[in-house]
Image (cartoon, rainbow, N blue to C red; front, side):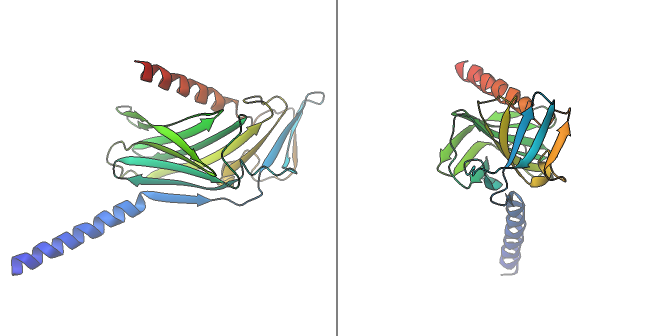
Length: 217
């Protein structure tokens, strides 16, 4: 009877620790509605300007992003105020730990979800699905999944033409601290064309090409 009690106690303690571990493997960031910003470029003056968007952009207005682990799968999600859509939109979520980094991106009708071990010894890639206002990326869990979170953010962009940052574009970030305009209101940044998402677009195109090659082989 004593041994049985010890066994039951051990099982309960183990379950508590496992539950704590699974609870820590889920995280959500909520974002305000109506906080999309607009970037415009004045070629004649050589300046760009950030301002709150005067137009409603619900398809890139982020409501929340989340990270969770289900079994041996990592799930990255983004929910917007409208629907995930538009040939000129780009959506991105990143979750980094001390062990691994996971990324989800979707744009122009194509998407992917992938992970990398920080020591470079492991790689996984999965897929994305769209259902109304929600984008979901799924890929295999790498390592033990017990690494400490070191970064979690997402953004959604809308271009006049996909990937064209020469004229104007709209963006929303979660959390807002990740935005290039954070800490300033309507700002005219003379002579500085920074803050454009061209680099992320290059990564998106390159990653989609890589997955196409892997699938072909």
